[in-house]
Image (cartoon, rainbow, N blue to C red; front, top):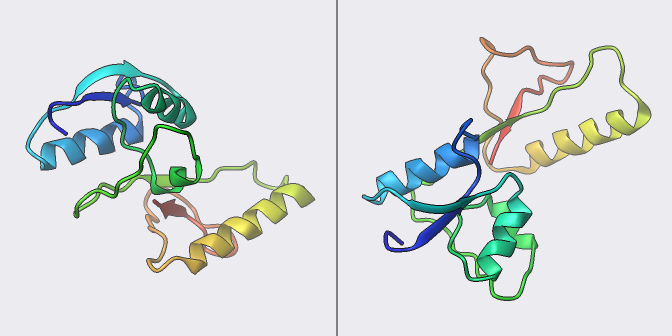
Length: 133
């Protein structure tokens, strides 16, 4: 992939996915040639479908099927990006409560436990911190 043009999330200010892309490329022994930076992952996939380059995207994006795209896993070790969920304390609507329940269910169904960093965040009642993808 070292000879390919890369499409990426923004480098300035650097997004977490941009950092993961740089890490993966460095581990493979090269620096990516970035052709285009975009904010939306779906836009990255559309640009790949248009033949403008390759992109590193979260595994969950594989559900976005566009003609002209193929998804391939990276060789280990794969970079990880931590996600956090923030909401206003004390304002938990029924919709937000359902979303939190679904999020917790997804986290619990994963093989790996969620990343916990008590020094940088406070857990809610169920000990929810963040999800690593």
